[in-house]
Amino acid sequence: MNESLKSITDWLNAHKRQTVMIRKQELEDTDQTRITLEDVEYKPSTPTIDEYTEGDSLILHGSGAVVNEQGDIPLPQSTYQIYVDGLKYAEVQDQQLSMETERAKYEIFIQS
Image (cartoon, rainbow, N blue to C red; front, top):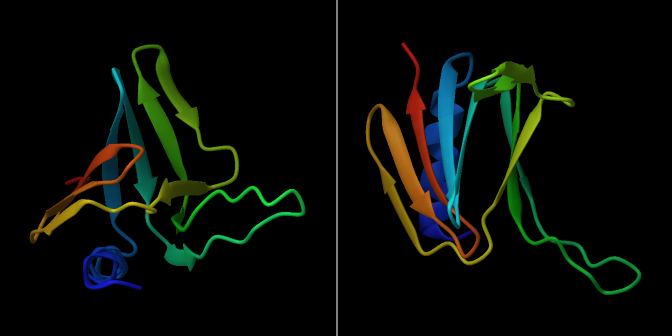
């Protein structure tokens, strides 16, 4: 695990039992998810039988919901997955973190 990924994981672990808002921007689409963080798991990529890999990821465990104009939609498995392959940038502050991967940009902040 590289230093940037370690600082992200440390920040998330320091905010367990708190509610965080995740804003993910991928191409022209922006999604928001709220989750009460219970645990953080690093999952390295593992090739499947057809050699397809999903890539390294952080799994955030906790109850939460996708937030949109029609109302909140509960997370189906009480998890939120962030693919961290190709981590380009990470900035950790007291109340928020920002990161960019090959797939998306994320802003995660403590919800008060």
